[in-house]
Length: 319
Image (cartoon, rainbow, N blue to C red):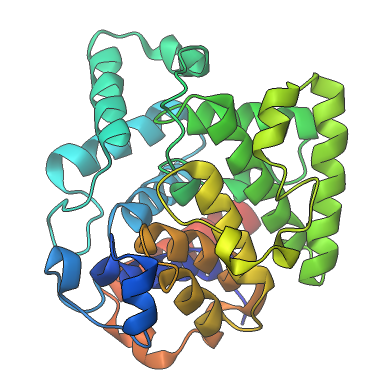
């Protein structure tokens, strides 16, 4: 039986674990020795099936949602992860981005000072440098909270969540585009119809909110153009949020199964685990977690715990 929560959680985690051994490899290196299966060690010297910060923070968000939506609860889970290796694959935090690390330390300071209301205001404290992919990689479970809400309310919730680690509007808009696309996929639309609907919604929303032309330009390949028609050589896959959004949408739209989509993401090189996690989330929704290769699922660290989290998230929102 289909489970949207498990589609998302396993989709993200398997993509992440597949990409971990290859992180920071160049595209040229990946072309010479492409990823073909779930392996271990490599970049971070982790056993096969080990997922990283992408899945950890996705699980932290999902678990927080199970307890009732609250920025404070989400922030506390993130702090537990950073300080105590909570929701890690094997009891250690081995891959944490600098922006995310600093932001979580800031969350801890705010909470310790009792400045809980300031969690709602983090989006006003943005720097251009806050545009890494660290909020996009973890945002997908938020789809349960934003579904059936107005587009204005959706964007407000998404921006506040992104701002826990990445407050810039560009990072938030990347999350919004990703979640709007995912929302249409959850409604059973064919993926190119879902993509077109998302593009139309975003273009209308930009007009309504007077989104700056400069910021709109950053999303040109995704919104004003059709990302899947762009040549592979123009798709980058580093840690910049726009690159991650473009690469994941491209990999999802130019393949026809989970396996091909995430391997394509990894074989782009560079931020392999994050690109594959973001791609894997969409592919998980579209194809279903049952279509993820059995060996990959069986290799995954904490598989039963992830399954239980998926059950809990389904109960919270659908019972």
